[in-house]
Structure formats: C-alpha cells, structure tokens
Image 1 (cartoon, rainbow, N blue to C red):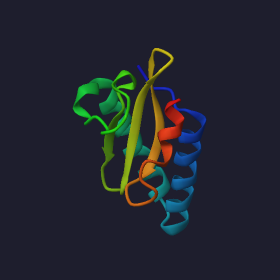
Image 2: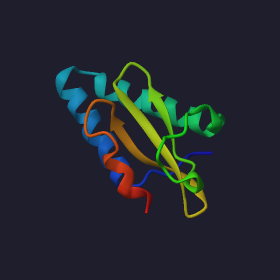
Image 3: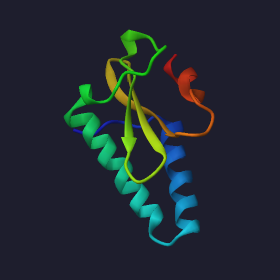
Length: 102
C-alpha cells in the first residue's frame, strides 16, 4: 500500500529534491529515497509516528522523521484515507501546513 500525496506535499518533495541535487550531485535521489522510507514507515507502522500536538484528533496527524535530512513527512486522515500532507523542513515555518487539514 502507498500513501497518496496532496499536491502541495508532492511539490515540496520535488522542490527539495531539486535543491539537494543542485547542491550535490546524487543528493536529490538520496533525499527522495529517504522520504520514501519515511512514507513506508507510515504505512507499515502508522502508530509509530508521534501525533502532532494541537491538531484535531479526528485527523490523526502524525509526523515521521526523514533520516539524514532535516525534514519530516506529515500524514493525516483526509476523506477517510491517510495521506501525506507535507514534506516539511524541520527548521522553517513550523506548522505552515496546518491549513491543509481543512
């Protein structure tokens, strides 16, 4: 099973991967692979990601750390299905993605 990405989350993934690739050849693909590993953890062990404080319990918002990079994958229950709502940099604009839960 795979988790669907909201359009904004997919765009964040593409932009970050392109940035890493510009900075160092091969890092874009490495970043995408590490994000996929975080998504795989979200699928295999959804309860292992800590809940995000201050979010509606009905949305079951959780975050999964992207290893080797300062990013987290944020998942939430949307329209009865868990989805990736953000690929968020850990040090920039905390919680900017919260409007996507509506």
